Image 1 (tube, protein in one colour):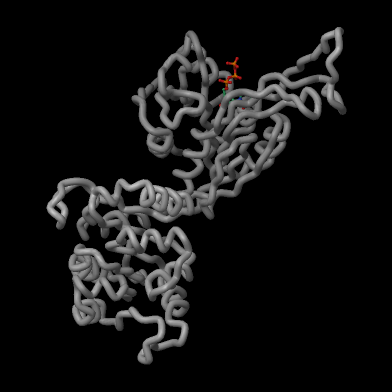
Image 2: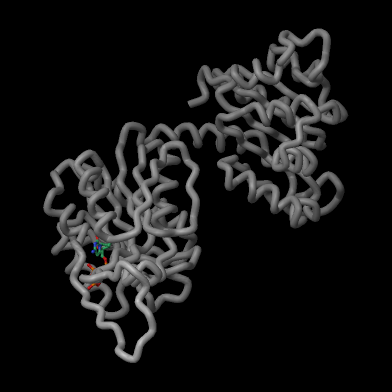
Length: 399
Ligand code: CTP
């Protein structure tokens, strides 16, 4: 996957910098072109001559060097590269990246770069666990920067712990897999729904539910990481999404969600309805706030459209349609009824009886039931991992 890719390799001043000589060779052997941008401290651990010889390119390490090819070398380099790998990334350089500091060639190049960035951190285990580092890493991750996690092992300082740079072969495989995965569902269109819907009683109050939207968001993100074009129709939830392949449409009510989904569905190869859609709405919402009075207000409920069942009626043989079922009792029977009644390819059952699964949690425990009578039970794990399992199930049965 890395053949003819243009890679900008950032090296900062950690002992593992000497291993980047090998990383450059791996990239070049795979057919990529490599240019290096390094901090001055990196040269304590690997020489400029080594890096220039292996990459067959000049190393960029000084913003104001007279022999730079361009006056704005950081812009020329970042325009040139397809992606950026920073290995090793010290605590200092991660701190600069997270805070927008640009006082050397590497941190300046990072700020000028708007494509994929992979970071392989390397530092002492106590530094790695420090709240300031963890905060910086979490912030960069939330902005889409990919971290190649430091494994546990022997550190140069004599400690044993998490903090050593991942081995060059594993950095290479991580990046290579990333681009292979990113092409897997290229051209596929996916519709995902997430979160609750709110049905207004008056301008102040509503009927809603506890759905956090985390499962639907995880599905949208994994589909996008696999290269699919995702439309995410999200009810009122607090989670942000920032993947360029996710187009997000925010809605409030079940009816708004229906209007959006029915339009998008015919163009979707895969649809996963993870939203907890309200089954009832208010027949007569008040235009102004209902005031307290001795006479209690009467709220008349009417059913909403079952979006999933409607999509099931319109489904063609080329499309896959997946639903969720949230049950408290007779779980399997209810889920299989929904699978059949809504014309789904498979259904993902959540039970509210399982600890750590369902509303609000970062984890889930689910069972999948498909039309052919097959089932799969997935033990408690993160919603992101569950999303991967659901998608690999879908890809196995795809038409
Ligand atoms: N669903 C939908 N539109 C609705 C209600 C539900 O599209 N108005 C979808 C959900 O997104 C989910 C599936 O149908 O994928 C099952 O939802 P669930 O709430 O478990 O079941 P319901 O069909 O609403 O039935 P019940 O509430 O009686 O269990």
